[in-house]
Length: 120
Image (cartoon, rainbow, N blue to C red):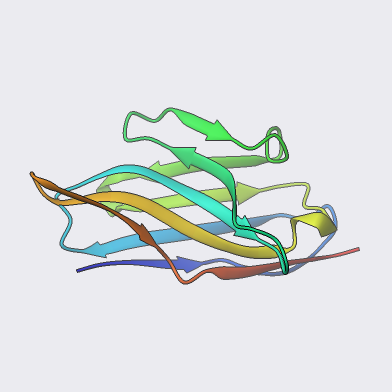
């Protein structure tokens, strides 16, 4: 069994910064891609940023230039540094990871989410 646990959300003023963390634990052989998605009320969950085991990254247009995704492979942890936050960034942020528990198994996992609220 694998768990993803997010932390670092909260309330911040417009223009402020937050750093989200997501730690994976459990039966882990290898972690492939990890990423962050956001979901606002009434909207579908959407990609914020992803990072592969190679370190290559991908960002939503809305995140480019403001957010930075990184990972610590030794700690099975992915981070999202969010700078220049805007009220429209308000959402629940979910961690996602593509994890192999054995050499022959691979599954996608979600965390429970952490709330980010940006006040104007």
